[in-house]
Amino acid sequence: MLRLLALKLLGLHLLCLLALNATGNALKSIPLLAPIEQKTPATKTTAKTIAPTFKTLQWNDLMPEEDLNALLNPPNYIDQLDDSALEDQIGDQLKIDLTSTIDDPYQQALVSTIIIQEMNGQAIRIPGFVVPVEFDEETITEFFLVPYFGACIHSPPPPPNQIIYVHAPMGLELNTLYDPFWVSGTITTSLVKNYMASAAYSMTMVSYEPYTE
Image (cartoon, rainbow, N blue to C red; front, side, top):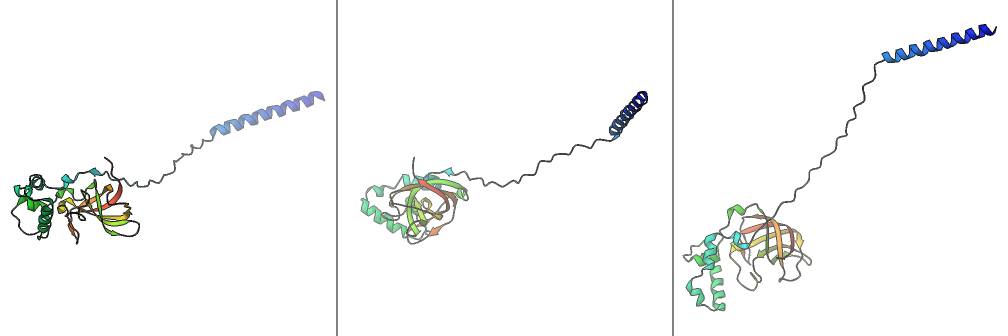
């Protein structure tokens, strides 16, 4: 009896071994699935606005060499005039139509609208004083930028090619007219006239800051 039971258990053991062996062989015959390719999700690329590089200019850079030489070498009669007579003479000269022909190179330079054509469309940074044109109680939105204090207000205006008419969409805050600024923006070679002065250059202001050397 015990012998018969032992044989039955041995038979069951052998059947289990055969079944396990068959299952293993079957599993080996099943082709493995290819690994799933992990794709990196696409990232959105946003266009970055590159801030323009502003070229620092001095006022002489806006004036042709012949005009600069004429102003640096005034005729002899200028030395014979006192300050008040000189202002009157310059003021009278500025009333002359800019298209008229003047023989004196010095007088021509005083009213010159000749510009440096290569400046058109350039991003520049230039120091100067503000002469308000359009403003409200808080900010100035249109102004002349001039190279020295008092121009167009307490003294005759500089030559038109030494004045920039500035459009300031975000506004400029000015405490006193004595305050000079660095003004940055894109300059164009377009003539602007009003009752105060004529400017041979225009600019759309991008930024401004108090003047420091």
